[in-house]
Amino acid sequence: MKTLEIIGFKRANLDSASLNEIRDTGSVPCVVYGPGIPEQIHFHAPAILFRDLIYTPDVHLVELNIEGTIVKAVLKEAQFHPVSEVLLHADFMAFTNDKPIKFEIPVKITGSSPGIAKGGKLEFKTRKLKVKGLAQNLPDFIEADISSLDLGKSFKVGELTPEGYEILTSPNVSIVTIGIPRALRGKKAE
Image (cartoon, rainbow, N blue to C red):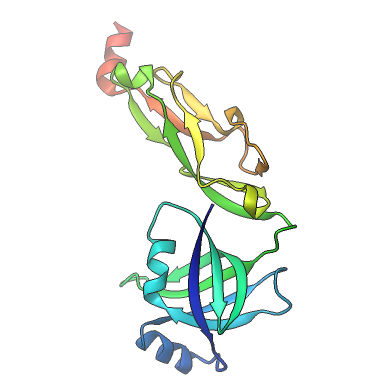
């Protein structure tokens, strides 16, 4: 899995006035917590550093460099302004290499479906799966091969075979379905 570095600076004041001041300077207030560190750290980082972390379909482990202290973490939550969609706050979860972490991994579709060749439509039901495993064992994406899907058929989570991690999403959840267009439904009835 890819690692991204974010450079941050500790913040002493946690009141709303200082938060607004941080945001006005182009930085994002953040907090990191979890079993990887003894106590939570409040810090801020330039908003430009979050571009490759948030605005991408890829997932990353994050190496936080907070005034020289290196913390391995994952992005747990990002809060955005409801109108302008500006990043307002980021929560990170610190981890250690010997304890499993829970993470959402994107699904990548491979193969060509005979159902699509017949005029079916690929319908995504879920684009990310919740997994649990050691950070070094988590993949960049989970492949779902749709080569055997015909019209009206689905590829479910239970059909995947994870190696080195566990999938927490229910095995009955559909990842993709080959939808039958209305025009083809009418032909089947005839």
